[in-house]
Length: 64
Length: 411
Image (cartoon, rainbow over all chains, first blue to last red; front, side, top):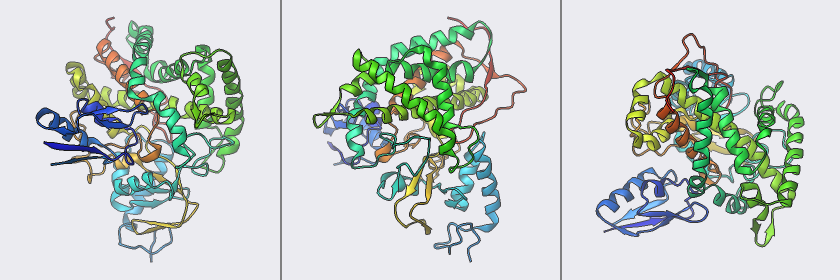
């Protein structure tokens, strides 16, 4: 399983992650990202990797 | 001795290549009066003088430097000294830096989330189709005049809950502050824009009164009702937000639509891909935002003596992180000259980054998505009228006119 984390200090609400990986990330009421599923594998992991690579602020960390 | 205009000694050898300076300066001069294809300028700047001092501003063109400048608002402030639009107080939230900035974004961000914008989408789709109806049978249109300009302006009026009859007045004001007549460079701007700015303040004074008297489901009513630590926004704060919305929300989507449709008219293969594979639209929009970067640069001012890429920048100097150059930097984008609608990852900075990340980015994305979807559904084939010379406007990349011809459209 891969662990998903967001650095709240870095997130400024580009919204790329919850658009590209809606099953892994969600938006809070200001549009900043929150983690919906914090341990992922398979399809969800693919989504999480996509989001991590597309975050303009480098705010997402995936770890084993 | 460094022969660059900075007059300083080169450190690290990156930013002084006198033989390439003339070419770069030529590009920068052209950029001031509008540039059809800015990407070669970005490349030349990045490769020859990634920290380029023009008489008015220090231009940053490497993604790493730009990202640093956007993040570090304590060094590169977005305050009133960065750009003068005739306003008498800082525009909110653009010209207020962290930490104070956060309290305004806490109120404004919820009004512009992707979810909130999705709620407005059907109304925008109806509007887009009404606009297409007006020229669909004519087999030609001026896309700029009849679509790219009125669409974002009408959406803005609807969003704020303002009378649609005010459209023409808004367009005049927007141009009056963004492209004031008789202003050249930074220093003549205040006087050239101040008269129009006062009219904008007066208009929003009345609009705020009206919304206080009769609240409704719109952004202005939500701002009036919002509180920060139990306190509502002051009248001045509301005005300073409205003023910024007028500047930031109208022209930028016009610029994007112009840039995108010029590109798609000239690249039929890309256009066919959109028509045949509608699922590609969201990522195509991100790629067009990257390649075209309709807002090519942002304005900052140095808050201290700093050094970027070996180049000293003095406190008080204006600095422009060139977003378009960041978006074509090979350090981030493999084959940056290739426009690939399936590009992934695509961490473009067309909406900037850091604390001042474009508040309206999700509104812009929604407007662009609906516009491209509906237009291509009804008018899949079009070309720029033969013989047209496109004239790009300065600073923000719209065209003065975009005549398109097409077979008579279906409904």
